[in-house]
Length: 86
View (cartoon, rainbow, N blue to C red):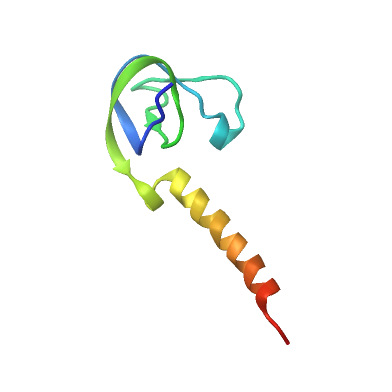
């Protein structure tokens, strides 16, 4: 159940399954392998197995960081509209 702290590419894995429901809405755990689906996304918890990855993005450059930034930008637009007087 550890959350992945960054985006990355799987370089070694042993029956690794990730819960990507927070990002994709998919309720089933996703099996990650070097051949078929090696991309790992920050903020998703590892549910089974183990693995090693090469980090490709952190913070606001990661997939979850981009989503949070976009959500924050949408919220700022709404706040700006309500705060204007005149």
